[in-house]
Amino acid sequence: MDRWIALAKSAFMEGERVYLRPFCMADFPDFLEMTQTKENARYIFPKGLTKEQAEYLLVHDWIKEPLGKWAIVEKSTQAFLGAIRLEAFKEKKASADLAYVIRRSAWNKGYASECVRLMSQKAFEEWQLKTLRIVTHRDNKASQKVAQKAGFHHHSSFKGSDRYTHRTEWYEVFRLERPR
Image 1 (cartoon, rainbow, N blue to C red):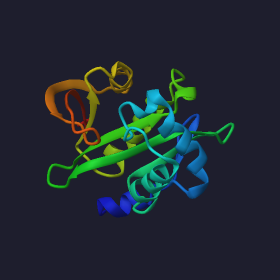
Image 2 (tube, rainbow, N blue to C red; image 1 turned 90 degrees about the horizontal axis):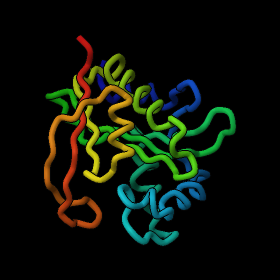
Image 3 (cartoon, rainbow, N blue to C red; image 1 turned 135 degrees about the vertical axis):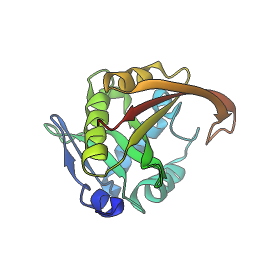
């Protein structure tokens, strides 16, 4: 099956405590709060977003082209917890990067690990990917711990330009290969 068709069929996914669904404009108040929380914005979102910039980001980065992008919602309360996405697809290598952010109020509750495990299972079993990577800022120990708890192994380090600040940063790469 075509990978994009498979992704389209996975628009809604369910884990033990969360479900993943496409973003919608009703998510904007929670998305805005998440982008303006210093701890969340540090690694993921451009610094100093106005309300209008956050709305533009939500629509153009998450809603307009929804395949491979999901809002994370807690099943029991329907609360918005964060976002997860596949990016940097390499068709010939059947690989992609996995990126996620959990709002500060939901940290240290296992939601990120649950989502990464769910995405990894889908990536290998349904989307026919061979490799998943998680790239973290060197000092983002929490995301590195999430990657390791989900079975990813440290693969490499590199120095590169931050996509938003354009400052040179050190990054850590974690990889997970499809089980044979």
